[in-house]
Amino acid sequence: MQPPPIDWGEAFRIVGSGLLVVFLIMSLLAVATSLMGKIFTARDARKKAAAIAQGEAKS
Amino acid sequence: MSWIAYHEGVLKILGIQVGFGNLDLPHIIMILVGLGFITLAILKEWEPYELLPIGAGMILANLPLTGLISQPEPGMQPGMAGVLGIILKYGLYTWTILPQFIFFGIGALTDFSPLIANPRAFLLGAAAQVGIYTSFLGALAVGLIWPDWGFSLKEACSIGIIGGADGPTTIYTTGLLAPDIMGITATAAYSYMAMVAIIQPPIIKLLTSKAERATYMKPTLRPVSRAERILFPIVAMLLIILIIPKSAPLVGFLLLGNLFRESGVVERLSNTAQNELINIITILLMLGIGASMPADRVMDPRTLLVLFLGLAAFCVGTGAGVIFGKIMSKFSKEPFNPMLGAAGVSAVPMSARIVHHMGQKANKRNFLLMHAMGPNVAGVIGSAVAGGYFLGLFINF
Image (cartoon, rainbow over the protein chains, first blue to last red):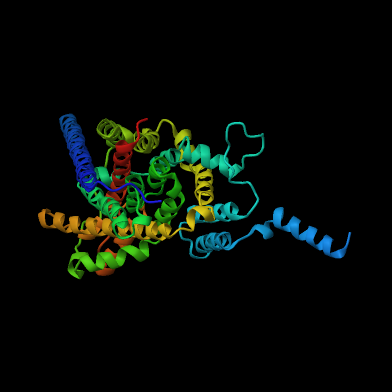
């Protein structure tokens, strides 16, 4: 049995928007993860600096 | 009773009740294919957890008169449905719950730290999905050359998704869009995952120079805090599902499993997801996949086309990942090995291992495994997103 004729305009639209969506979501995830990393790295650095400062004050 | 009448009676019984009398060439071929899968699983250890039960399911489904693949139907007498038919109907065709629980287990087994430490890897995971869309167009183009063997839009989506090299995503997407070809697309996905070591290296070598392959990268990534590992699945789940709601059954379960793992407070549940649950579901799912390939459904010229297009999707995905890796290496401040793009297909961890080995072969100082795991796990998310996108086009839950 032959499948119904293909609407190539629709097919290319699916490909275009599919790729766009995948790249958009992955880019957003990259940005969100990067921001999260920066925030937590800065927090850890602050904590470390505070601990060093506290140690120096005690000594 | 004369001897001839007795002989005819025996032959009649053989023809009706005995398996041998009903065994025809297509069934024999499928049984041999099933035996081939079992042989590859045992002797070559190619994806044995998948190919062995798939092969066994294929053999059982193609033995005549067993009734094993009879699916339950309304009004059917008790005991008439076969166990494999019940798995097929409720696990794969009607409720489609098995692939999601596999994803749950995979999430509990996956460490996303290499991806969190290097978020650029998300882009490599996206680039490797190009193969999915290329094969989608290729499947549609078949109808231009051989109109009788053409594929519908839904079938083309199911064939394209093989390029993600992600078994559960392929099974889930095909189960909902084109259940008739689910067995073959799932088998193709798992077979190509098993053949990563054969398929990927020539493509990587073709697209990169030795100097590029030898690019040295620092072997360690920054340490990732527990808070980041806990927040990641929550943030990713919300972000992806709010954009593509139909990816929720896959992405949601993957990241839920990961949250169980990283939370550190539900160790028993996480251990169950990583071991007993994923093992039980693997048995059911793979037997079901094997059972979805009775000869009358598979012995079709279109099966070969599906296998070819799936392979093409996988190759194009690998190539696209490498090319994107080359582009990233041009813009990267620090040395960046373009081979990492090949790990963007979600064959975890095989693709990452291939890139690592090729990197060491080109430069003995290289230790790329942790760098390659980033795009590798990003590929799992990328293919689930692509599957969810396809489902969103055709399915209204």
